[in-house]
Image (tube, rainbow, N blue to C red; front, side, top):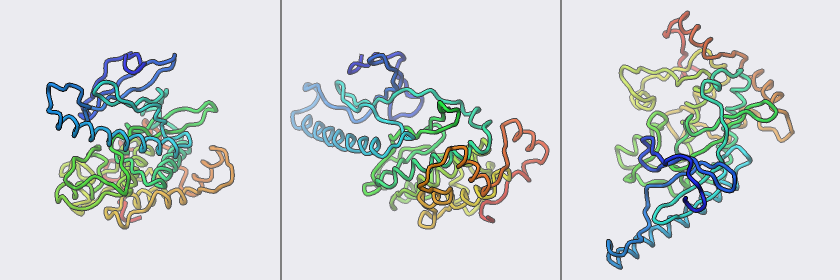
Length: 328
């Protein structure tokens, strides 16, 4: 039992290194629960001197204050498509957060959606990112595993951003000498450059870059193509001046959008707000289906399932499957 939460599963790390997570029940509701591995609140006086104890407790109190404010801001900017943080608390020496457990679609189901629904998912995600960025919050770890895709009660689809472990205020980004959290696959070129050169400043632009890769994955089920014999990650190709290619089955309008999102120079990279404008962020009320129709009319109507994609790849060969982003 942790603060009234009865664990259903043993907490595990899944190689994250920064937290352990599992599922629990409280008041008849099921929750996702995460235990942070650091900081650790000192409670054993025989281990530390009185001065050391007070210094560590001061650090923990400052951490608590910062995270409570951070999570409150996240909850306040959510309109249903950013997961709500139910609780943030300390139990013993460890800190925890909980969110409601949400039924979700499998990634294969996402890949097999009609193209209209895929484009709607992209719009929903960038809308959520705009909400965060308007409050100066950088997610810091945008990737498909940090998105919950789900069916709505009306049979449409939606997506929720989750996991803000790597998040920060843009006004207080990680220092160049600090450890940077996040997935290397989605890492922006400027993040890696800062890690190596120990200088620079991370901004909202890193979220836009990662979202561009995610858009491509949603639309065709995979990352853009690059020379995998030379590079392990897309940012490596960008840093070396090589091309990253967008599959030709991506609708034309979306190709242009993704190209702007993957601009290697963060100062020239398109903003989340501008992307939302490209989707058409009118104030008038529209159903998801109507909005999808409008998007498809401007961005192309090609639809591709996993099976169709595999068949087309076999027919055309990889050399014709992608179009250079930079030519758009």
